[in-house]
Image (cartoon, rainbow, N blue to C red; front, side):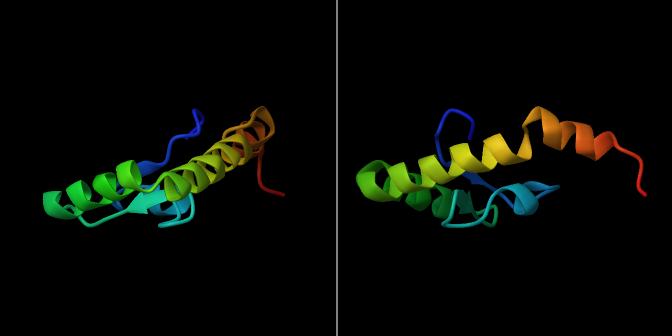
Length: 77
């Protein structure tokens, strides 16, 4: 994400809170055929790949910046 590359992942752990399907990457159920199709679409569709990549970079900057990290450790008020 931080490199501006869209992520293709399964909805495990906190992935659904980080990756928004078709906004900054792809979130798919674990079927390998679906993964192959999603990666193929990204390879063939430059506009979609670039849009998802830009959005992935923005999300990474917002989610993983020093301020966000500090906030995650701050005691709840």
